Image 1 (cartoon, helix red, strand yellow):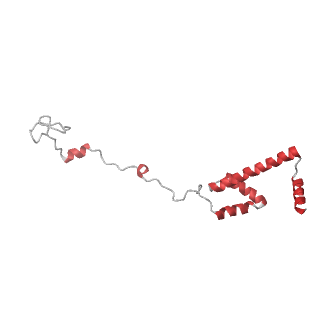
Image 2 (cartoon, rainbow, N blue to C red):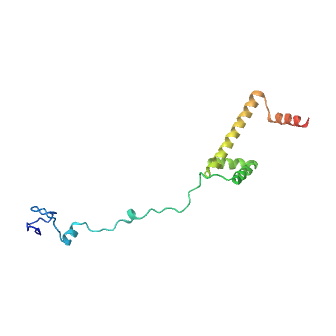
Image 3 (tube, helix red, strand yellow):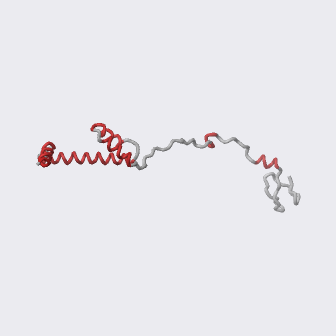
Length: 139
């Protein structure tokens, strides 16, 4: 191969003529030989990530007033309410419901603790308290 401008012999890898500096026009076949052959990309690398169309659990949603009222009514059922309070406090679901149930469990434990202290140190009895309350209300 030789330079089109000055006729100097060129090496196959020359991009410019060493004598005159003219850019070398390579034939299309030579250019295509220097390019790597096309290969199909792997499906793993080009495949889009499959995303689930399911909605993420609503953990931070605010509860409506109706939901809070239903929650309190369900907790008013003697044994079921206590079980539901534990499930709501330690299970998944809405964060507001979880916080309300955890706060109620803390208040229940505080009330039991205060009652135990009153019972131990003052001889305070729940039956005695109810009798005194009924005496006050009837007189």
